[in-house]
Length: 413
Image (cartoon, rainbow, N blue to C red):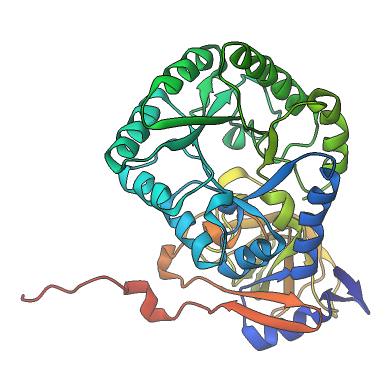
Protein backbone atom coordinates (compact mmCIF):
# COMPACT_ATOMS: atom_id res chain seq x y z
CA UNK A 1 0.00 0.00 0.00
CA UNK A 2 2.88 2.36 0.91
CA UNK A 3 6.01 1.05 -0.80
CA UNK A 4 9.10 1.97 -2.79
CA UNK A 5 9.59 1.24 -6.47
CA UNK A 6 12.55 2.50 -8.55
CA UNK A 7 13.68 4.35 -5.40
CA UNK A 8 10.47 6.40 -5.41
CA UNK A 9 7.83 6.26 -2.69
CA UNK A 10 4.38 5.11 -3.78
CA UNK A 11 1.06 5.36 -1.98
CA UNK A 12 -0.98 2.64 -3.67
CA UNK A 13 -0.88 3.57 -7.36
CA UNK A 14 0.30 7.17 -6.91
CA UNK A 15 3.84 8.44 -6.45
CA UNK A 16 4.72 10.82 -3.64
CA UNK A 17 6.49 13.27 -6.01
CA UNK A 18 3.42 13.48 -8.26
CA UNK A 19 1.15 14.11 -5.27
CA UNK A 20 3.46 16.80 -3.92
CA UNK A 21 3.67 18.47 -7.32
CA UNK A 22 -0.13 18.44 -7.75
CA UNK A 23 -1.23 19.41 -4.23
CA UNK A 24 1.82 21.16 -2.76
CA UNK A 25 3.54 20.61 0.56
CA UNK A 26 3.22 20.13 3.46
CA UNK A 27 0.69 17.47 2.52
CA UNK A 28 -1.03 14.68 4.40
CA UNK A 29 -1.64 11.58 2.29
CA UNK A 30 -3.67 8.53 3.34
CA UNK A 31 -4.15 5.10 1.78
CA UNK A 32 -7.76 3.96 1.57
CA UNK A 33 -6.68 0.33 1.19
CA UNK A 34 -4.55 0.50 4.34
CA UNK A 35 -7.42 1.92 6.43
CA UNK A 36 -9.90 -0.65 5.17
CA UNK A 37 -7.44 -3.49 5.69
CA UNK A 38 -6.77 -2.44 9.30
CA UNK A 39 -10.49 -2.18 10.09
CA UNK A 40 -11.22 -5.58 8.57
CA UNK A 41 -8.38 -7.13 10.58
CA UNK A 42 -10.26 -6.18 13.76
CA UNK A 43 -13.61 -7.27 12.37
CA UNK A 44 -12.30 -10.66 11.31
CA UNK A 45 -10.29 -11.23 14.49
CA UNK A 46 -13.41 -10.82 16.62
CA UNK A 47 -15.81 -12.56 14.24
CA UNK A 48 -16.47 -15.22 16.87
CA UNK A 49 -17.89 -12.61 19.26
CA UNK A 50 -20.96 -10.41 19.12
CA UNK A 51 -18.87 -7.28 18.65
CA UNK A 52 -18.84 -3.71 17.50
CA UNK A 53 -15.82 -1.64 16.42
CA UNK A 54 -16.12 1.99 17.55
CA UNK A 55 -13.36 3.96 15.84
CA UNK A 56 -11.76 6.58 18.12
CA UNK A 57 -12.43 9.79 16.21
CA UNK A 58 -9.76 11.73 18.11
CA UNK A 59 -7.08 9.86 16.13
CA UNK A 60 -8.15 11.40 12.81
CA UNK A 61 -11.49 13.12 12.33
CA UNK A 62 -11.31 13.93 8.61
CA UNK A 63 -14.80 13.64 7.16
CA UNK A 64 -13.82 11.42 4.25
CA UNK A 65 -12.09 8.95 6.59
CA UNK A 66 -15.13 8.88 8.90
CA UNK A 67 -17.32 8.33 5.84
CA UNK A 68 -15.10 5.48 4.68
CA UNK A 69 -15.35 3.78 8.08
CA UNK A 70 -19.09 4.37 8.36
CA UNK A 71 -19.56 2.60 5.02
CA UNK A 72 -17.69 -0.39 6.46
CA UNK A 73 -20.24 -0.52 9.29
CA UNK A 74 -18.02 1.01 11.95
CA UNK A 75 -19.25 2.62 15.11
CA UNK A 76 -17.45 5.58 16.65
CA UNK A 77 -15.94 6.61 19.98
CA UNK A 78 -16.21 10.38 20.49
CA UNK A 79 -14.97 12.80 23.14
CA UNK A 80 -16.82 16.00 22.20
CA UNK A 81 -19.97 17.37 20.65
CA UNK A 82 -17.88 18.52 17.72
CA UNK A 83 -16.75 14.95 17.05
CA UNK A 84 -20.37 13.79 17.19
CA UNK A 85 -21.32 16.45 14.64
CA UNK A 86 -18.49 15.31 12.36
CA UNK A 87 -19.59 11.66 12.63
CA UNK A 88 -23.17 12.56 11.73
CA UNK A 89 -22.04 14.79 8.85
CA UNK A 90 -20.01 11.86 7.49
CA UNK A 91 -23.01 9.51 7.59
CA UNK A 92 -22.19 7.67 10.82
CA UNK A 93 -24.98 5.93 12.73
CA UNK A 94 -25.57 7.64 16.12
CA UNK A 95 -26.83 4.34 17.51
CA UNK A 96 -23.24 3.07 17.12
CA UNK A 97 -21.62 5.99 18.96
CA UNK A 98 -20.16 5.89 22.47
CA UNK A 99 -19.35 9.20 24.15
CA UNK A 100 -16.20 9.24 26.30
CA UNK A 101 -14.33 12.14 27.91
CA UNK A 102 -14.13 13.65 31.38
CA UNK A 103 -15.73 17.05 30.74
CA UNK A 104 -19.05 16.63 28.91
CA UNK A 105 -21.06 19.87 29.00
CA UNK A 106 -24.84 20.08 29.36
CA UNK A 107 -25.06 21.20 25.73
CA UNK A 108 -23.06 18.16 24.58
CA UNK A 109 -25.22 15.81 26.66
CA UNK A 110 -28.36 17.34 25.15
CA UNK A 111 -26.88 16.97 21.68
CA UNK A 112 -26.01 13.30 22.24
CA UNK A 113 -29.41 12.44 23.74
CA UNK A 114 -31.17 14.13 20.83
CA UNK A 115 -29.04 12.17 18.38
CA UNK A 116 -29.75 8.83 20.09
CA UNK A 117 -26.25 7.56 20.83
CA UNK A 118 -25.48 4.04 22.03
CA UNK A 119 -24.02 5.02 25.41
CA UNK A 120 -22.28 7.63 27.51
CA UNK A 121 -19.06 6.39 29.07
CA UNK A 122 -19.36 7.97 32.52
CA UNK A 123 -16.09 9.29 33.95
CA UNK A 124 -17.20 10.62 37.38
CA UNK A 125 -20.06 10.64 39.89
CA UNK A 126 -20.66 14.32 39.14
CA UNK A 127 -21.05 13.57 35.43
CA UNK A 128 -23.57 10.84 36.23
CA UNK A 129 -25.70 13.33 38.17
CA UNK A 130 -25.54 15.86 35.34
CA UNK A 131 -26.55 13.34 32.68
CA UNK A 132 -29.42 12.13 34.88
CA UNK A 133 -30.68 15.70 35.35
CA UNK A 134 -30.54 16.45 31.62
CA UNK A 135 -32.26 13.17 30.74
CA UNK A 136 -35.06 13.74 33.28
CA UNK A 137 -35.60 17.25 31.94
CA UNK A 138 -35.90 15.81 28.43
CA UNK A 139 -38.13 12.92 29.51
CA UNK A 140 -35.53 10.36 28.38
CA UNK A 141 -33.47 7.55 29.85
CA UNK A 142 -29.78 8.07 29.13
CA UNK A 143 -27.89 4.85 28.31
CA UNK A 144 -24.70 4.77 30.35
CA UNK A 145 -21.57 2.70 30.91
CA UNK A 146 -19.23 3.44 33.76
CA UNK A 147 -15.65 3.83 32.63
CA UNK A 148 -13.79 2.02 35.35
CA UNK A 149 -10.17 2.82 36.08
CA UNK A 150 -8.63 -0.58 36.86
CA UNK A 151 -5.30 0.86 38.11
CA UNK A 152 -3.29 -1.06 35.51
CA UNK A 153 0.04 0.18 34.18
CA UNK A 154 -0.19 0.22 30.39
CA UNK A 155 3.61 0.58 30.13
CA UNK A 156 3.36 3.37 27.59
CA UNK A 157 4.22 7.08 27.46
CA UNK A 158 2.90 8.83 30.61
CA UNK A 159 0.99 11.39 28.51
CA UNK A 160 -1.09 8.61 26.90
CA UNK A 161 -1.50 6.36 29.94
CA UNK A 162 -5.11 6.47 31.17
CA UNK A 163 -5.61 3.46 33.46
CA UNK A 164 -3.71 4.37 36.64
CA UNK A 165 -5.16 5.89 39.80
CA UNK A 166 -3.24 9.11 39.21
CA UNK A 167 -4.76 9.57 35.72
CA UNK A 168 -7.80 11.84 35.32
CA UNK A 169 -9.81 9.23 33.45
CA UNK A 170 -12.50 6.88 34.69
CA UNK A 171 -13.83 5.86 38.08
CA UNK A 172 -11.69 4.05 40.63
CA UNK A 173 -12.68 0.40 40.28
CA UNK A 174 -12.99 0.16 44.06
CA UNK A 175 -15.69 2.87 44.02
CA UNK A 176 -17.43 1.78 40.82
CA UNK A 177 -19.65 -0.91 42.36
CA UNK A 178 -21.37 1.55 44.67
CA UNK A 179 -21.79 4.05 41.85
CA UNK A 180 -23.39 1.36 39.64
CA UNK A 181 -26.02 0.74 42.33
CA UNK A 182 -26.65 4.47 42.60
CA UNK A 183 -26.90 4.81 38.81
CA UNK A 184 -29.45 1.99 38.66
CA UNK A 185 -31.66 3.93 41.09
CA UNK A 186 -31.70 7.19 39.12
CA UNK A 187 -34.87 8.00 37.13
CA UNK A 188 -33.09 9.28 34.03
CA UNK A 189 -30.45 6.57 33.73
CA UNK A 190 -30.43 3.19 32.00
CA UNK A 191 -27.30 1.23 32.93
CA UNK A 192 -26.14 -0.63 29.83
CA UNK A 193 -22.46 -1.50 30.12
CA UNK A 194 -18.95 -1.20 31.46
CA UNK A 195 -15.97 0.44 29.80
CA UNK A 196 -12.24 0.66 30.37
CA UNK A 197 -9.39 2.14 28.36
CA UNK A 198 -5.92 1.97 29.89
CA UNK A 199 -3.84 3.89 27.36
CA UNK A 200 -2.54 4.22 23.84
CA UNK A 201 0.34 2.81 21.77
CA UNK A 202 0.28 -0.47 23.72
CA UNK A 203 2.97 -2.93 22.61
CA UNK A 204 2.08 -5.84 24.89
CA UNK A 205 -1.15 -7.55 25.87
CA UNK A 206 -0.67 -8.41 29.55
CA UNK A 207 -1.96 -5.03 30.79
CA UNK A 208 -5.15 -5.40 28.73
CA UNK A 209 -5.70 -8.94 29.98
CA UNK A 210 -5.18 -7.75 33.56
CA UNK A 211 -7.64 -4.87 33.11
CA UNK A 212 -10.26 -7.18 31.60
CA UNK A 213 -9.90 -9.70 34.41
CA UNK A 214 -10.44 -7.01 37.04
CA UNK A 215 -13.41 -5.58 35.16
CA UNK A 216 -15.10 -8.95 34.65
CA UNK A 217 -14.97 -9.64 38.37
CA UNK A 218 -16.99 -6.47 38.85
CA UNK A 219 -19.39 -7.44 36.05
CA UNK A 220 -20.09 -10.73 37.83
CA UNK A 221 -20.75 -9.03 41.17
CA UNK A 222 -23.15 -6.57 39.56
CA UNK A 223 -25.06 -9.34 37.82
CA UNK A 224 -25.38 -11.22 41.12
CA UNK A 225 -26.86 -8.04 42.60
CA UNK A 226 -29.44 -7.70 39.83
CA UNK A 227 -27.60 -5.26 37.53
CA UNK A 228 -26.94 -7.19 34.31
CA UNK A 229 -24.91 -5.41 31.63
CA UNK A 230 -25.58 -5.42 27.91
CA UNK A 231 -22.11 -4.57 26.66
CA UNK A 232 -18.48 -4.60 27.70
CA UNK A 233 -16.17 -1.99 26.15
CA UNK A 234 -12.46 -2.90 26.26
CA UNK A 235 -11.29 0.42 24.80
CA UNK A 236 -8.55 0.62 22.21
CA UNK A 237 -4.87 1.37 22.39
CA UNK A 238 -3.06 -1.26 20.32
CA UNK A 239 0.16 0.29 19.07
CA UNK A 240 1.59 0.71 15.59
CA UNK A 241 5.16 0.60 14.32
CA UNK A 242 6.97 3.92 14.44
CA UNK A 243 10.54 2.62 14.77
CA UNK A 244 11.27 -0.95 15.87
CA UNK A 245 8.14 -1.75 17.89
CA UNK A 246 6.39 -5.09 17.35
CA UNK A 247 2.86 -4.31 18.52
CA UNK A 248 0.36 -7.15 18.90
CA UNK A 249 -2.18 -7.79 16.15
CA UNK A 250 -5.97 -7.75 16.60
CA UNK A 251 -5.88 -11.55 16.08
CA UNK A 252 -3.41 -11.93 18.94
CA UNK A 253 -5.60 -9.74 21.13
CA UNK A 254 -8.69 -11.80 20.34
CA UNK A 255 -6.83 -15.02 21.09
CA UNK A 256 -5.69 -13.75 24.51
CA UNK A 257 -9.12 -12.43 25.48
CA UNK A 258 -11.18 -15.38 24.21
CA UNK A 259 -10.83 -17.56 27.36
CA UNK A 260 -11.99 -14.68 29.56
CA UNK A 261 -14.94 -13.79 27.34
CA UNK A 262 -16.17 -17.30 26.48
CA UNK A 263 -19.85 -17.80 27.23
CA UNK A 264 -20.52 -14.22 28.27
CA UNK A 265 -23.70 -12.62 26.87
CA UNK A 266 -22.42 -9.04 26.61
CA UNK A 267 -21.78 -7.41 23.25
CA UNK A 268 -18.07 -6.66 23.00
CA UNK A 269 -17.16 -3.08 22.09
CA UNK A 270 -13.67 -1.87 21.21
CA UNK A 271 -12.33 1.59 20.38
CA UNK A 272 -9.28 1.36 18.07
CA UNK A 273 -8.05 4.64 16.64
CA UNK A 274 -4.33 4.84 15.91
CA UNK A 275 -4.28 1.14 14.98
CA UNK A 276 -6.73 1.77 12.12
CA UNK A 277 -5.31 4.93 10.55
CA UNK A 278 -1.80 5.54 11.91
CA UNK A 279 0.29 3.59 9.42
CA UNK A 280 -2.04 4.53 6.56
CA UNK A 281 -0.74 8.12 6.52
CA UNK A 282 2.29 10.10 5.39
CA UNK A 283 3.25 13.74 5.78
CA UNK A 284 5.11 14.99 2.69
CA UNK A 285 7.43 17.97 3.15
CA UNK A 286 10.15 19.69 1.12
CA UNK A 287 13.58 20.86 2.21
CA UNK A 288 13.82 24.66 2.09
CA UNK A 289 17.39 25.10 3.31
CA UNK A 290 20.41 23.07 4.41
CA UNK A 291 22.17 24.80 7.29
CA UNK A 292 25.58 23.36 8.25
CA UNK A 293 27.24 24.05 11.58
CA UNK A 294 27.80 22.46 14.98
CA UNK A 295 24.71 20.45 14.04
CA UNK A 296 23.62 20.15 10.43
CA UNK A 297 20.02 21.23 9.98
CA UNK A 298 17.60 20.52 7.15
CA UNK A 299 14.89 23.18 7.37
CA UNK A 300 11.66 21.87 5.84
CA UNK A 301 8.29 23.47 5.08
CA UNK A 302 6.42 21.29 7.62
CA UNK A 303 6.52 22.19 11.29
CA UNK A 304 5.24 21.33 14.75
CA UNK A 305 2.09 23.17 13.67
CA UNK A 306 1.49 20.37 11.15
CA UNK A 307 2.81 17.43 13.20
CA UNK A 308 2.90 18.03 16.96
CA UNK A 309 3.83 14.56 18.23
CA UNK A 310 7.65 14.97 18.12
CA UNK A 311 7.46 18.24 20.08
CA UNK A 312 4.73 17.10 22.48
CA UNK A 313 5.89 13.56 23.25
CA UNK A 314 9.47 13.59 21.95
CA UNK A 315 8.01 10.99 19.59
CA UNK A 316 10.19 9.28 16.98
CA UNK A 317 8.77 9.00 13.45
CA UNK A 318 10.55 7.51 10.48
CA UNK A 319 11.66 10.03 7.85
CA UNK A 320 12.93 9.09 4.40
CA UNK A 321 13.48 10.71 1.03
CA UNK A 322 10.51 10.18 -1.28
CA UNK A 323 12.50 10.29 -4.53
CA UNK A 324 16.09 9.76 -5.69
CA UNK A 325 18.57 12.45 -4.60
CA UNK A 326 22.00 13.06 -6.13
CA UNK A 327 23.81 13.69 -2.85
CA UNK A 328 25.81 11.84 -0.24
CA UNK A 329 24.06 10.89 3.02
CA UNK A 330 24.96 12.80 6.13
CA UNK A 331 23.38 13.32 9.53
CA UNK A 332 20.77 16.08 9.82
CA UNK A 333 18.27 17.38 12.31
CA UNK A 334 15.00 17.82 10.42
CA UNK A 335 13.47 21.07 11.68
CA UNK A 336 10.59 23.34 10.77
CA UNK A 337 10.31 27.13 10.42
CA UNK A 338 8.33 27.78 13.63
CA UNK A 339 10.05 30.01 16.17
CA UNK A 340 10.39 27.32 18.86
CA UNK A 341 13.41 25.14 19.55
CA UNK A 342 10.93 22.27 20.02
CA UNK A 343 10.09 22.52 16.31
CA UNK A 344 12.15 19.46 15.44
CA UNK A 345 10.53 16.65 13.45
CA UNK A 346 13.49 14.28 13.67
CA UNK A 347 16.99 14.41 15.16
CA UNK A 348 20.20 12.86 13.84
CA UNK A 349 18.79 11.29 10.68
CA UNK A 350 21.19 10.00 8.03
CA UNK A 351 19.75 11.25 4.74
CA UNK A 352 20.95 12.28 1.29
CA UNK A 353 19.48 15.76 0.87
CA UNK A 354 19.64 18.89 -1.18
CA UNK A 355 17.38 21.97 -1.24
CA UNK A 356 14.03 20.97 -2.69
CA UNK A 357 14.32 17.31 -1.68
CA UNK A 358 10.97 15.70 -0.92
CA UNK A 359 10.72 13.89 2.43
CA UNK A 360 8.05 11.58 3.78
CA UNK A 361 7.31 11.31 7.49
CA UNK A 362 5.72 7.95 8.14
CA UNK A 363 2.89 6.79 10.42
CA UNK A 364 1.22 10.20 10.54
CA UNK A 365 -2.34 9.02 9.85
CA UNK A 366 -3.15 9.31 13.57
CA UNK A 367 -2.60 12.38 15.74
CA UNK A 368 -1.25 14.26 12.75
CA UNK A 369 -3.55 16.76 11.06
CA UNK A 370 -6.07 16.44 13.88
CA UNK A 371 -3.57 18.12 16.24
CA UNK A 372 -2.47 20.79 13.74
CA UNK A 373 -2.67 24.47 14.63
CA UNK A 374 -2.27 27.90 13.08
CA UNK A 375 0.53 28.97 15.44
CA UNK A 376 2.91 31.50 13.82
CA UNK A 377 -0.02 32.27 11.47
CA UNK A 378 0.61 29.12 9.46
CA UNK A 379 -2.37 27.83 7.43
CA UNK A 380 -3.00 24.13 7.95
CA UNK A 381 -2.01 21.69 5.18
CA UNK A 382 -4.16 19.88 2.65
CA UNK A 383 -5.20 16.23 2.99
CA UNK A 384 -5.45 13.66 0.20
CA UNK A 385 -6.94 10.16 0.23
CA UNK A 386 -5.44 7.79 -2.36
CA UNK A 387 -7.62 5.03 -3.79
CA UNK A 388 -5.62 2.95 -6.25
CA UNK A 389 -4.28 5.36 -8.86
CA UNK A 390 -6.80 8.08 -7.95
CA UNK A 391 -6.05 10.86 -5.47
CA UNK A 392 -9.00 12.58 -3.80
CA UNK A 393 -8.50 16.00 -2.23
CA UNK A 394 -10.42 15.56 1.02
CA UNK A 395 -9.39 18.84 2.66
CA UNK A 396 -8.20 21.92 0.85
CA UNK A 397 -5.12 23.75 2.03
CA UNK A 398 -6.25 26.60 4.26
CA UNK A 399 -6.17 29.98 2.53
CA UNK A 400 -4.50 32.89 4.28
CA UNK A 401 -7.92 34.46 4.88
CA UNK A 402 -8.84 31.53 7.13
CA UNK A 403 -6.28 32.80 9.64
CA UNK A 404 -8.62 35.63 10.69
CA UNK A 405 -11.99 34.03 9.96
CA UNK A 406 -14.43 35.01 12.70
CA UNK A 407 -12.26 37.88 13.94
CA UNK A 408 -13.36 41.54 13.91
CA UNK A 409 -11.42 44.77 13.63
CA UNK A 410 -12.38 47.59 15.96
CA UNK A 411 -15.13 49.78 14.52
CA UNK A 412 -13.49 53.07 15.49
CA UNK A 413 -10.03 54.37 16.48
